[in-house]
Image (cartoon, rainbow, N blue to C red; front, side):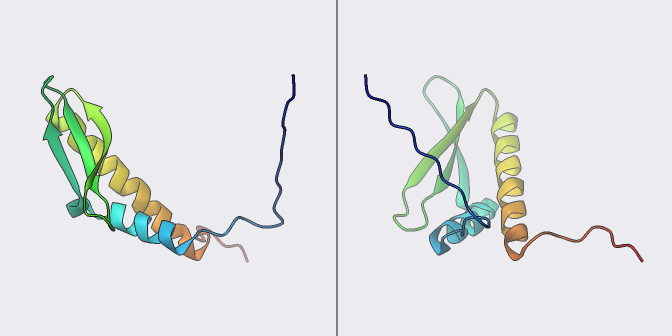
Length: 95
């Protein structure tokens, strides 16, 4: 049996591509999301692909409130990612 093992290390954090940043900014806006009801009664959250304009499914929830909560959590998550693109936020300094 042959095994392949590979590791990587960085001297600094890996650089985030412009395309990834655009996607994060797109996902941080709630108007790019929707909820659809599936034939089995579940609700599916989807976001609109910024380039192709088709909808990409993300999660399934039993209730519409659960689906909207999932969207709100996703929007909050990507908003925080966009906020920290400029680097860490100073929360306390000492004299």
